[in-house]
Length: 628
Image 1: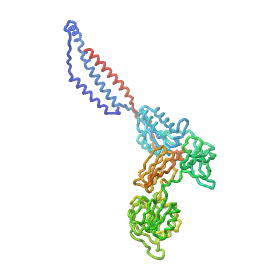
Image 2: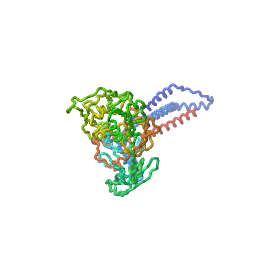
Image 3: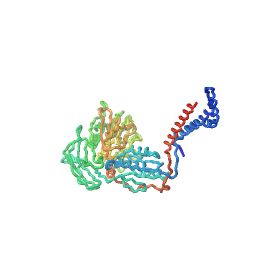
Image 4: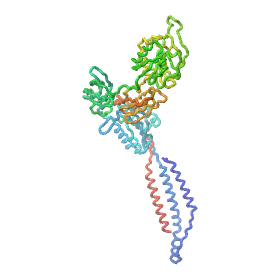
């Protein structure tokens, strides 16, 4: 036997206290009686019962001790363990998006909850219950619970997510439980087709489901054309796909629809055509009802823009016109050009990027991207770089009359972004400046150990790109790689708030900290707002756990209104199919059919005994008082 609350036995300390009080209390009682023959006669009879009266004197003590004993045991809540009389039951519950499919009057997940509670109700007395829950993440909502009603209440409080669930990782997690208790019983509760040595509870029922994927739009000679695929996963059907648009500040309007004949399990292409029109959001929707409506709709938004690409080029070379055209065309920017003298006379403000070509001011502008090209006359305050001399080739003619730099082959996300799409033609550079650059700078192109194109953050915490050579001192400007490189560097200098407007639920959305950003707030489809930490990172990560539209609001310096962009989170295609599974088994064999159970239904018994003893004690004390 053991106790749930052993400290309750401290109440037994009352027993010696009561005995001590009984020993030291006065036994003398004063009584006034009539001195008559009748009283003397009564005394004779009382003397005959004297031995019995001595026994009744300690009844009160016994009752008090019993009350203290039972009350202490009641608080301590004793539990008796019974060998081989119960089971330790573990549930692995799938909480993926497909579990939200409607199955009759309830969802698959609600059906799973009922199945688990049924197992709990029908389990042996004294069993324990543990649940491993896997949806967006793996968790253990309760472990080793012995109270059936509490376990069922905990199961009822759960809800399925909208992403994919990795049941394999949950089973690997459960392996540790099995190794610690090889007599445990495991139930896998899911709608996927798993081959397993556990008890499988399959809650799927062949429900109809349709879904959209590989969607997009384009403009053709007839106007706006929406394209994509639909899938009917259970049976052949003809589906209606609608296209709806929302203009700035306007209402959602259906502009086109089409019918698609879909064979079960085979993707069918669709195309919907509308007149040429502008929109802020474009929605595709399957109008036919099915078991999971959330994957019947998808919303596309215009590419997110953080701010206008307004660039000021401060040019002190002869190749300024070519550089201006490259930034304007490949970088899709509005470019103004001034001389260093004019810039010094009236420093311009309000630009998102400043390009210093062959000239560097003593102090750099803040809250804007910076390009420093061939900054040999000084590195500029707060730039983070230091000029260390000019490197020239060993020979004036021949193969050693120029340098052949190499593009970065790094695998980091930032390096891939900066070199994305490059053909990597051979570049020749006549001479370059050697710079000391901060460690946070990424090398895009280098000669030996010297970086000649790099990107990073300066001391103002603004994005900065450094060219260690003049464009005219190389053949880079004549190569197709130059325009691609300028595009990549412009995307780095003017990062969009988000890289995409459509994600799968469960994905990590990268939110870029754009120049001049003060704070970023992400609002989920359910209305929950989260302020991202933008202090120490150029990219913030946000986990998408709901389906629907997320809004990302960016507060910029010197801007009255927030920049707001939108992203849509979809049901993953694997969850729309509601397929998966495979062989998932626990390693090892069960060594015992049962585990040790327990019997804890003593609480009501001790409550009843305590009440009876208290009542008996009260009646006895009342009678003793009346007899005196």
